[in-house]
Length: 402
Image (cartoon, rainbow, N blue to C red; front, side, top):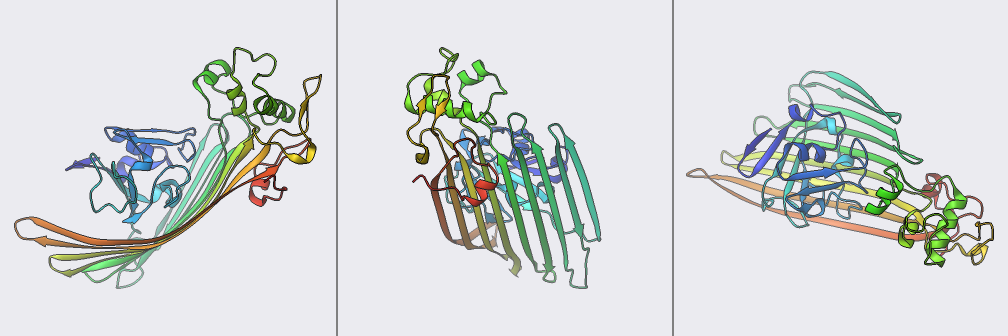
């Protein structure tokens, strides 16, 4: 780790001290003053629950770039980019840096620049070869990583690498799992001794059953392992009934949970995210003292965020009522699904001029066209069984409630 000016740089050597696949923001938090990172899972992949703070600024207020390509906000439901954990395999990051103050003016960011994170991908190796690594952990966790380097292919210095990573683990509480499949490829073409062109491609496919968000009281009264009500469907309907149709709580929970907290205990929730990211970079020395850096990029994301809504009734089964035995007729809940889609196309152009007396002049331009769609829908749950958190989230074939 090195510090220069108001920036801290974390090298690949430092990153290798952490478990392979660890979220780079978690590494930054443990190596950089003023930074803090928390997550629900060991690898730090859960974008819904991850939190990152830098001197009080959240990840929504910090700029992020990968090889000069804007990544947008690094929080949940990224409307103008993609999380670094899905943009690139952690093992292929060559290094990263984070500002200790406000982000510099040359940071390509559309949000507040409370700070700036810069990630640099590693270059293909000059010598042909490969690497395979395997990690195992509790709750059936495993991670596989593989990479192949072509080595220098010709007299012009052409070289590339391709890599993949698969991470999977059962949730440490409740039902469900977390899974991520990633692929990266990078090609480097030197332009004599005056510059180079690089092309990058990244793919990410992330699926997860979410963890329940808990209040302090829920944590203290129900325990840290308390989570969604799946697989007890009758209990899920009963608690949804109390949350939606009464101001009371189920028998045995008076003085333990509030009516609002009963409503938090839904059947389940999950998320699916898919990302395609590509860029072409060119660095070229126009003159001895003038450098040009160009980045053209494209990014396509799609996602489904779903979960049980305890405050909407599935209408096909009539108005729910509480039976004498404590069971509930009807279905006082529904499946809520949000379908997100984003397409970004853009480029950045930067010129750096080395002026006399150790002065430097930088100027540039950034253009981006961003199309963002976010549709939220409700689907009926069944009378005797709920949605399947994986297949139904993908197909969305259940009848609309609204």
